Length: 106
Ligand SMILES: [Zn+2]
Image (cartoon, rainbow, N blue to C red):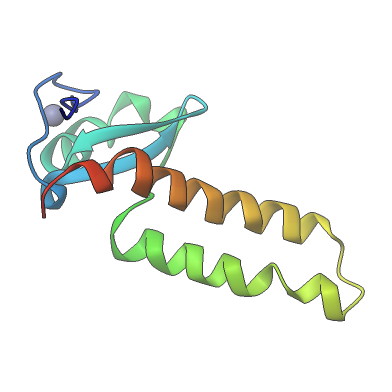
C-alpha cells in the first residue's frame, strides 16, 4: 500500500510525478505541486527556501555536476570540503528520488 503524498503548501495529495516539485527547505526535503511551488515559494518563504527544485532537469544537472566535482580533490590539491559538499548534493538528489519521486506514477 502506498502512502499518499501531500503538498506542503495546499495540503492536497500529489498524484503524478510530473506534478511534483521537491525543494530543500527548513532542513528537510519537501514535496510541492508544480503550481504551488510557482505560486507560494516565490513569496514570503523565499527567505528560508533555496527555491531550487531538487527534481527535474536543473536538479539532475546539479547532481551530475556535483558528482563530477566530487572526484577533483582525489587528483588535485583542492580541499576535501568540495567532495563533502558534492556528495551531500548527490545524496539529497537520491533521497528526493527514493522518498518522493519513486512513489508516484509518471
Ligand atoms: Zn499544492
